[in-house]
Amino acid sequence: MSKFFEFEKLGTNFRTEFIAGLTTFLAMAYILFVNPSILGEAGMDHEAVFAATAIAAAFGSIVMGVLAKYPVALAPGMGLNAFFTYTVVIGFGVPWETALAGVLASGIIFIGLTLTGIREIIINAIPPSLKQAVGAGIGLFIAFIGLKNAEIVQADPSTIIALGDLSSPTVLLAIFGIAVSVILITVGVKAGIFYGMIISSIVGMIFGLIPVPSGLSGIVSSAPSLAPTFGQAFIHFDQIFTMQMLIVILTFLFVNFFDTAGTLVAVATKAGLMKDNKLPRAGKALFADASASVVGAAVGTSTTTSFVESTSGVSVGGRSGFTAVVTGLFFLLALFFSPLLSVVTNEVTAPALIIVGVLMASSLKDIPWDKFEIAVPAFFTVLMMPVTASIASGIAIGFIFYPITMLVKGRAKEIHPIMYVLFVIFALYFIFLT
Image 1: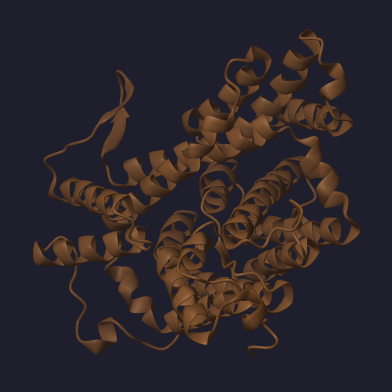
Image 2: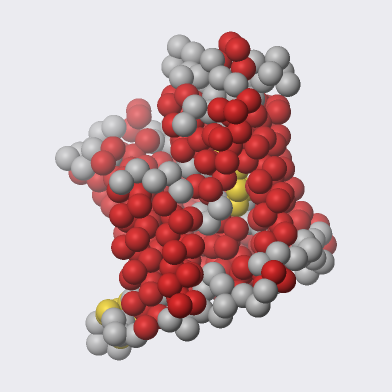
């Protein structure tokens, strides 16, 4: 094993890699509870989604570790799950079964684009400012969902939105969870989000706001059944051939492109694995990511992608693919802890959404706001996601404005032809589908 994962060459060992894998798992474990909470609002079975989340994460992480040999773990992505529920299912009125078929289609296309090399052309065609704006916009949208789920903000007929009842015990529990998570992450605790959820759950049980698990059976049980979600993506695959679903599939692809590329570069750079500013075995890493999305859709979850939380494992010494394998094995072990879903309520998961939003919004710093022709499409991309409750609308508006402002500014040569194609597609989207 040490020879296969090149421990000696990378200056690592079994113990270091194991601890790194566990560290990454703890940093990512919140997704086991947040994902069922979000997809549950789309009408999906919570326990089945819990199982699908664990299986997709385990498969993706293990394949990444064995095939690409990178210390990068995967799981259903934040932002992509929000798009799945709030834009596709609730916003567009698409049944969750058909939405899963869209995830499956995007994964299959992702594999094809990766194998043919077309993926690189598409990513290079989209300007960095729009990629950064998409990430930041999704972060703000996710944070808003967290605030809404915790009832820290609520609808208001006069101002559209306003502060909720901050004296409510459950709202106070959510605020406590945010404060604890912020403190833990600020002082450098790698799994601060996960530990924050644990502490919030315990405090909630002490004050009677959250049900206390009854004995060992309230903590550990057999793995949940996948029956409610398994194979639905294949059964409803024939329903994806519409203009509306084309937009959905394109959005799944775009967001996954950005997430994956950015995460792989970030983790590889931190681990010192970049060679001449290039990522070795990039094709294998992208294939692992794409295949995980296909498997995830098959068992019943939204798009699976590489997690930037993998840097937490790298920071404690993880350098080889064995780190990702260990993380994947812990996700398999987590299958037997589904009873804890009853303990992890909206008030407990909301801080995770808000903190992830903060982390994603950091990409705003890389946008050249002093260039108006770039600032306008970036601003609309970021702004329109939370105010329209639609990631697709934010992307569409930004991609429409970009060629317009660049053409008027006389920078037509900098616009890739693919951006004109996307301009037409998103313009038609607003004309015929909204």
